[in-house]
Length: 147
Length: 336
Ligand code: SF4
Ligand code: SF4
Ligand code: FES
Image (tube, rainbow over all chains, first blue to last red; front, side, top):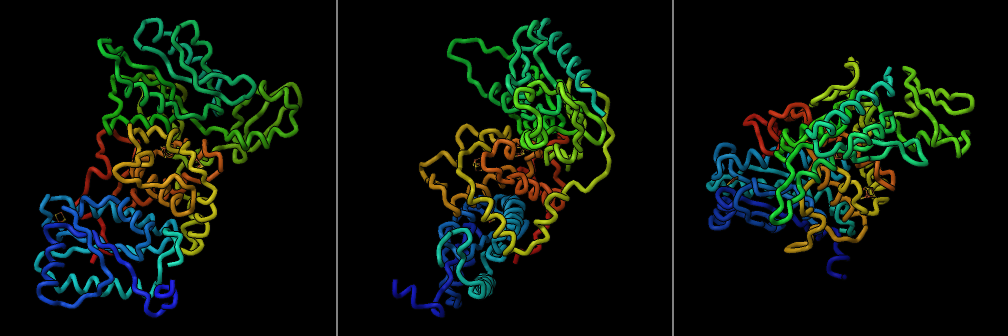
């Protein structure tokens, strides 16, 4: 495929974001309505709570060719379901460990707490993460693809 | 030093007594194999059959898998279920499995009567094959193994062999720190004193590698996997009635194709499903036809779970399930 193949420098990472409905998704929305610039690398999937994010979702995203995965929820103490983000933190921290142990670069995974009023923070997190993934290049270890 | 014959007798006597009184429905234990010194599972229903029960370092299976099947059987319509407990013979690691199964409300305590046997280590049948290479084939089924302290003495009608334990023991036994059953109705054997050791020395070399080296290691190992699912099927803690790897609707999580990404996905998800639960009974690795060191994945998560969340599975029924619980101060260093 010409437009993909010819283009090492124009390669744009694909980042999948799992964002909770109540804080982080609203934060991303705010960034949009406030016209804050952020990279177009991120495709956001809305979940009701970060606690809904099964480690399996993240691993599947990598397998389907994501170059990075970002999970974002309400700040600790602010989860609309009281404790969903604490559960998410436990599960996903351990999954990140597993990425390390299998030799898949764990820095391709990121978690963040973004509130509904933090449009600016959302943009910063995505920008920073995108820069990091750009340096790492395409993710092929779990997808088997060439990028 | 374990006197296997003495333990065997105690197991038989206890099973016989339970079966005679009708306290248990049946007893799950081990019997001698027909053409092999390796023991196999047996179900004893009659007191007069209790003498079949065998004990030795070749009782490798974790029989608690059958316990799960027993409690999951649904009675036929109109039939009165027989809810009497079943008797079961367990090694310390198998007894840890029962703790987890009770913790997760799968096996009620009253449905099981446990003959808990001490263990100073079991023998890997593949390693035994190697050690017996000079023993005539027709003699192998009849060998007798004695615990000689630092070595096993293998007797047959020829010159007895003495093999260092290190050459024969299962990997899990070399790093095991629980040599006494943790839950039991009857304790069989003399309490073993545990020597302090680094229980995770077996994964230290992998941990010391770079990401790239580790990936190459797992790539080589996991590309061997034929996805026969024996590792899942044998695991007593994989008890879901419908497994995510079998489900194809509404979403097919894992293609049946055997290729590297699918294999990675299978093994990483499996490891996550067992995180904080796997008691390192070694079942999965024992049955793998491709000799994949599956336990290393489990053990790495076991180690991290202990370091990060102070979770040690299989010890205390009162403990909460790791992923059913959290601590406000759980670490989350990398979170932005
Ligand atoms: S038993 Fe071995 S070959 Fe079979 S699915 Fe498990 S790891 Fe793969
Ligand atoms: S994952 Fe393997 S070692 Fe762990 S409990 Fe299951 S069968 Fe035993
Ligand atoms: S609702 Fe936002 S993390 Fe639970």
